[in-house]
Image (tube, rainbow, N blue to C red; front, side, top):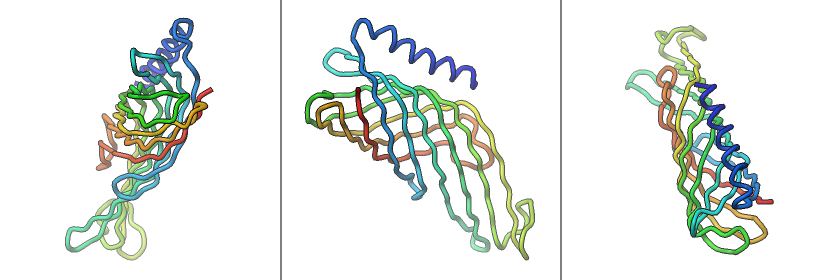
Length: 198
């Protein structure tokens, strides 16, 4: 699967490079930080190529997302804390609606990509000794890690400021095909990102 993702990333860059002679795409970089639905820390960034697609633009690039998310639950007797650390590297294609890098205006983003997803999942309890590895007086924990393929669905909006500058509020939703342990397979994140086009 990692070889497939690598090929997809290479194909995206080659496609952008092939189109360069026809549409003269510009190179852009962007990065940002945000959260998930449980208040964890999320971050993302990447490098991309912008090409004209009719009245809109298409952005092809290699992206990375990461974060650490925590969720607390209980069964009426014991409390459990689940922690998931995730790293995503993949190829993402965004359709930018009403986008102009040289104007100051609002625009919308819709995207889809394929990625390699690595996850570390851990569950701990200070009062339940049945999870696996014991610690403390009555506590225990269990953990698993793994990696595999996944997808990224992206939606959002932003504003350009001219001279290739823009900011966006994006909701990249990561879907892992093989989440370890009881880690969530679908992870919506919320990112505030800034980008510069050259």
